[in-house]
Image (cartoon, rainbow, N blue to C red; front, side, top):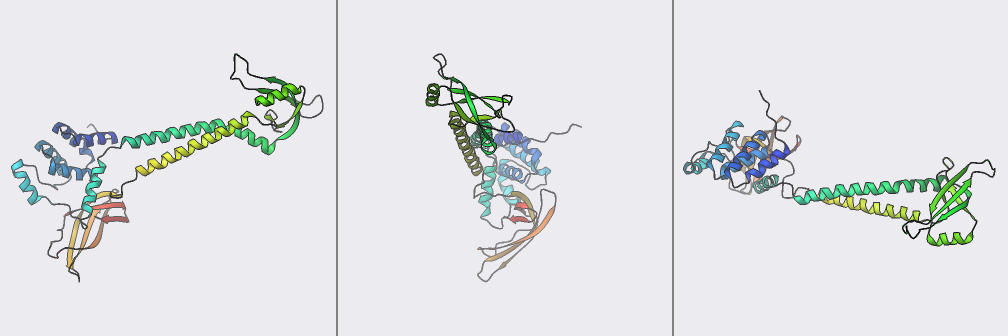
Length: 346
């Protein structure tokens, strides 16, 4: 026997889009695509809505067959002439302990079938690109800052002899001004000798060229004397600081984009934030209070996503006549579910 592959998120989104089509054949395909996720109460609410409002009899018949597998909560479809009369007589409407929750549920169901807006995806893409750019810039700046910090904390001083100067040529005007130097770790002729090269400013280059032979202080790491630098201002310092500032700015932009992307994805205040589950009335009682309002107590039960059946009770004072009947046992209700200890009857 061939196993039926459960629909993916992309399949569900495509089926929801088909339900909004004006072509009955496309809506039929949408019903078929969602028939495998009838354990989701939002899908079942959507099917209930389609059964009541879809103008095509074949679509209504397909919806009824899907719902009937979960239990006959709606009557079998009939001709258009008979259907409207029969639905009013036999269909059990969902009972709301607080009638103000009815439009909230309707808005939540409408929002659940709206695909992710392109603006949200663009924000996510910009956030990821900003993070990648920030990581790249911090990678460029990290090595120079690491060497600078080690030289400042652990560096030793020595005298370095200038061995050469380099300036841009007419054929390569973008080349930097540089100075080459060497230094020894000690006064002996057998002491190890190390070499280095460093960028300098044009003014410092001109001064060194006029000064002739000279020595300058150098800072090196005792553990690795090959890491060294002349103790003077250098364009490398400016470049290092500019890279750090640029990386910090891009990081701030990435964080702001992340916050904005998170804010726009927050549910609206007028929508339910918990999971919408179906339940049924076990018993209900209505009594008038001292002010003439009706105090309704409803005992209900529902099944959690983990399969646990919970029975609870909710009470509300409604500003209506005590003669209005309370819901009968078995009437469908909706529960906003967050956890086994946090839920409420709508």
